[in-house]
Structure formats: structure tokens, C-alpha cells
Image (cartoon, rainbow, N blue to C red):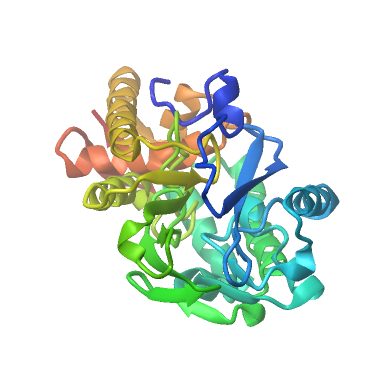
Length: 347
């Protein structure tokens, strides 16, 4: 594979680089361990008039302990958090929302569409995923497993971030105040269909124009790699993962930020460079999928993905490949046809 969606073997990719956060910044980075590259997930404590936590760490006891320890390093405990901003419903970003609510009853903010998704009937999701698994060519022997994984993911995230506990449902473009800081919601699909990044100006409250313009970018803008384009998984929109990623980065080009606080990888300042590298990675992905199609002749997206990588080891490759095949068709670089309910692609 030529696209750089996984973390290179570089220690700076696994933890915040020294000095990346300005000494006078009110932002404090807290890391939790995850069992996939790059080995950590970051959430951010904003030491404002009322403490704000952007994302809520990894799930289970390990995540709870690491979040408590991270807060304690900066003189806080879970009960002190007054506001929790959830960027997207993945377990490494919403893993401790319930625990924080139990500890101190903070105001919880999340994308409205993500909350709506968590409120869905699992049977509805099961039906959609079952059909899409057939369309993309998932073998019969794996179909039940793939469907059960999607349904369990929905139930798990609804446990970690209960929809009924979300106090403020956010829409793209909304500006809202939390802890005395004004945040702006930027919709960043591709990695996750409902994902938001939160922009803010941090500095002199009396004169916001003198502050540092920052982006809490979740899994949208990351250095030195691009987050996987999981988008909707095998839910509605499964073929849109790469087109949505291009729209995401194209829209983000219109902004400028002094500092980026990502969900993975180090805090960094080269925002524009990260956007361009992410777009180049998407281009490389399309080239790689096109070359694989040329080798295979005609194939469903599952077969293309399985030829590119071991899906059991790198399941994200399936979702990226599904979207890349559709994007190649959209660009006139591939053709498609439906054969017995399966969408087949040809270079």
C-alpha cells in the first residue's frame, strides 16, 4: 500500500513532540493507550473559566485510570470537568463520557447527527449493513461476523456516550461557548461521517484578536499520517468514504490555524502542510486501488481490498477501498456494473 494511513515507526508520531504546546497555552494534553497504531489517543483539557475537556479518552478501566492520572498531573480530577466536547462517536474518543457524567455531571456537547446515529434501532443498522456487505462482495462465511461487529459497535458507543446524556446537540457551523471559550463546529467527514473539529481562539479574553487560533482536529488533520477513511463503515454512505475525505480536506483548506491539537500524533503547527499531505495520501490511495483493479480485471470492492492488504489485520483497508473504487468510477478512471446484486469494478 502506498497511502500513509498508519503511523510510521517514529516516536514523535506516538506522543506529543516536546515544546509543541506553547508554554502559555491553557491547553493540556492527556493521552490514553489504545491497542492499534499509533498506540495512543489524545484528549485535551482547556484550563478556562470552567474546565473544558475535548474528547474523553479511551474506554474501560485502563482508559479511566489514564484519564484520572492525566488530569491529576495538571491539578484536576474528573469531578472538576464542567464541559465535555465529543468530536465523534468512536470508543477511543468517547470512552469516558459516562464516567465523567457520574463524577461531576458536566455539560456534554456532541454533533447532532452523531447523537441521532447512536439512537438508531440496531435492527435497522443490521439490515443496511447486511445488504451493503453483499453489495461490496463480503463472502458469505464472513458476512454474519461483519454485521455483528457493526451492530456491537453501535451499542458500545451508545453505552459510552448515552444519547440521552448529551445536553447540547451541535450542527455544522455552530458557534457555542463552553467555559468562557467560544468554539466553532467544523464538519470533517471521511474518518467518521459525523465528525466535528472544534476551532477556537485562545489568549487574551479581553482582546480575542490577540489570541492563538487553534483547531482541536480529532481524527481529521493529523501529523505525520492520515487517519483512516472509515466514514460510515458498511452503513449508509459506505461508498462515500473517499469522496467525503476529499470534501473534508478541500473545505479545511479555507481555514488557517496557528496550532493543531489532534486526536493522534503530535501537536503541530504546520496546518496547511498537513492538509496537503493528507490530500496527497488520498491521491496515492486512488492510484494504488486503480493499479490493483488493473491487475485483477473485474472484482468487487472486498476482493480489491483483500488483494491490497490483510483485512483481518487492517480492517480499515476495506472501507477505504470501497470508497476509492467508487471515487475512481466518479472520476472516469474505472467502470462498474451490478452482477447478481454485487457491485463489480473494472479499471
